[in-house]
Image (cartoon, rainbow, N blue to C red):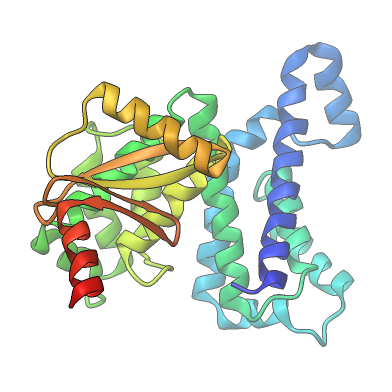
Length: 289
């Protein structure tokens, strides 16, 4: 991702975060609520509606070439693009959703698909904020990771979810059927959205969602591959060591891997920390071979 694209995404993150913070302030009492109405600030109810509203906007963009072009056409003024959003969305979605989309269309994107992806990122972040409010953010993060592993290790499910010959709604319903009453509502929503595989595959898309969940608490995700489950003490010591290395809290996602011959392999972003017997043997082979 280019520095410019990353800067635009971060700017949009700030728009959503400010809007949610403003909406939450309306929960502090009657005077704050009255003030929010007078100033047209987002309400607490807007936060609950926000994920669904933003996902609906993303779906509209994905289904309409004309709309994508209209909202990313450099020949149309920022004011013109903003006015179009207000005509389409005012009164139909929450004020906070309108605010996020209006800000997004003022930015320069590589195309309509890129705009849709940027708004989906905000929809995912909004759903994670709802999970955090409900006290199950870490549970959602873990359930998404585990479900992605189950899908990847079950060819029938993996193939069914990636089969473009089946309509997207049907594949999303399959995820809902598999997870309903087995995972919390935020997990079900996000896993179903990941079926569209905006990041190449279902698994890669889920990885992105998990990273956003960790970032919500200023953490990074470390995938830990082991031959046997780590003990509580081992997890604590590994977490502390990684925290010292990266300077932030680390969320461990543990994977049992039959290819790991003793020890542990840690994947932290693009970095791989090899502490397995197989890894040490391979290093020795390269050194002396």
